[in-house]
Length: 201
Image (cartoon, rainbow, N blue to C red):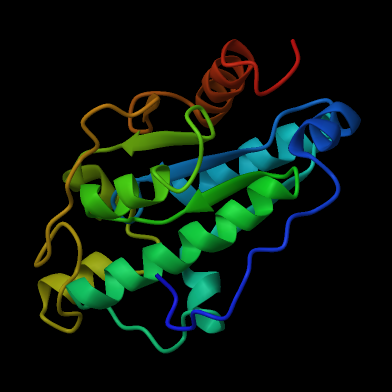
């Protein structure tokens, strides 16, 4: 609950259904979760490009980007990770109301934090996409050199090495990024969004 009691939610005169009709798609939160280097950022960019080329309203919220501004006061302790994800969920909810397909690329290692954001919105609005990839493959990729630094002790509380990652139990979509080609992964996600009537077929 907010600290102030003297506030009232202001409702838009434009309904989500009206935005969906104009945009020719439902708004949704596509919540990509997985280990560092599992392919979250790559897939969100590719899926966004595919959706954009179909004329859809989209926006990516990337883990590093939000820490430059919105969440620059947060570190990587368990409490800070939870607050990081909570703020992102609230922003994603606003974008959902604006009629946008929001793609989020965050490790979001704790199930309770992901479930907290799922509960912010209606059933069917939160699509959890697990970018499943073995730790060994993520370490092999290591595009930012983070695993190497974590192994040497330079980065404390690093997910998968010195901090836990809790895999989703019932994600809407599982993408095995160490088994399929990027274009195949994108096609599978688009097909699932069509199946769920988020996109028109």
